[in-house]
Image (cartoon, rainbow, N blue to C red; front, side, top):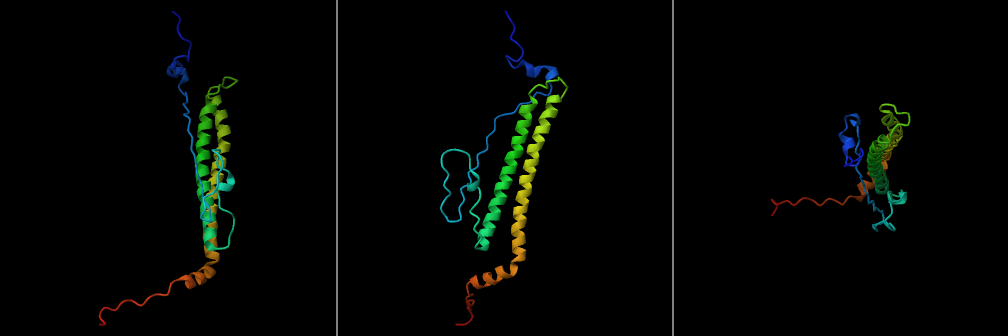
Length: 169
């Protein structure tokens, strides 16, 4: 009776030399960002990935509400993408670490995988910074145009009704 080769029954994971065996499960994150300023849901054709024009509303800045909506949409998209890219970097790192080092160096495959994943982590950090800057942009807009916003906000208020005086009968 012949014994199975290493790996045929998962025995390579039990081998003490293979202490750093990495398991990278398949993981999918689907994001449906159907936003629109017109009240009509954004049209997304097919089952393909979301395209960039569906992540953000049209850059129409004719009111403070549209500025707020654009900045909030950008912030939300950037946060979501930064999380997804960081996750992708970790998964890629795990997959690439399983590729044997051509020179046979100890931990060589992990070092090479970390170098590749580091660039994706920088991309995730950039997206996180984009989210922070989008929030800061709206905050700065509010500070710089506070006078104009308050002027319009004051006019838009309903006139206050005098309170009911129950003592007067």
